[in-house]
Length: 94
Image 1: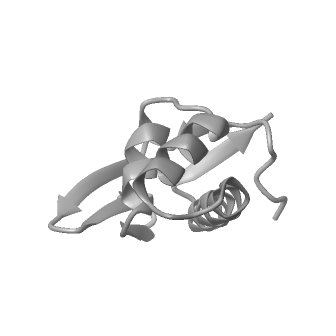
Image 2: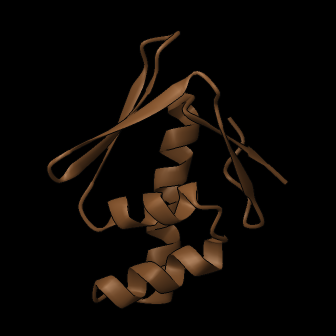
């Protein structure tokens, strides 16, 4: 699978739904049964992603919330996006 590109748009699959449980957000594709959980500080990034934020905006949000460098925030966010893409809950487009 191709890695999530630096310049990206995320498209939510129409067959996905989300649910919040205390400190976790769960995304599930109800046709395939695949799901993906988002916990910790990265769940705040999820909200920004859902609202259409750019990668740079998500990095700024994460660095404002936790003590992490922009480089580490970028790596963490891209790692989560790649996992979301592999789980099939989002599709990236250039």
